[in-house]
Image: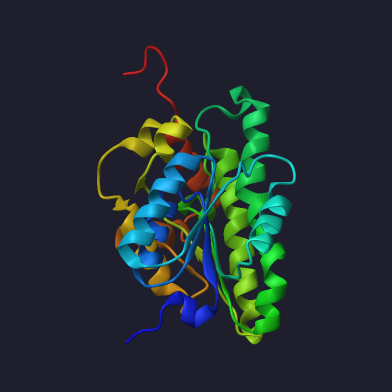
Length: 269
């Protein structure tokens, strides 16, 4: 019988952005495997409902921390709250993220600050916060949820793509750096996923039905890949697209992406 994540890495799995989408899917799969979960997001009511369901269904401990991770000092406060609760983090799943679609020049500066905070600074700060104990135990794992945009320039999702490129590079580097310490690191880079993200990012392209995967499929692929590879792009078609991008000059990739992603203007056919 396969070991649970808790047996494999020690402690609970801390999941950011756990109230919906990929984060909620991770929480459900991890708990179903018998590992305690620490659920982090802003929506306290949604987190509590998920936690109560997971505890009743899977007999695990599900702890809720309703934190706004875009607020100053959020990572420090979360680390303190975890310590005060006597919890040990064996698996850190850096899933929370925010995006914004449209002309870069027209996007609000506060959105850009929030994007950098949630997509880059928080994963970095939380990794630093829980890494020392993992290294000391020689046991632990970290998952960074990136995006297919991690691999290419993304006009009209410019800062989002850049922030996810940061996540991919950090995750792959730490995979190599922390292997001698006995730790597993994975950068999980999905394409279109059936989540709330498209609506929040205001990108109609992200909300189109098609061949994109469900949040549960993406989370399951990530958990299965942990310890086997530094990064993974879920879906055969998505893998092919990323491979094709590597054969084309970056200026061509950027130009094509701009044509595909450009917002429709008044008068456009």
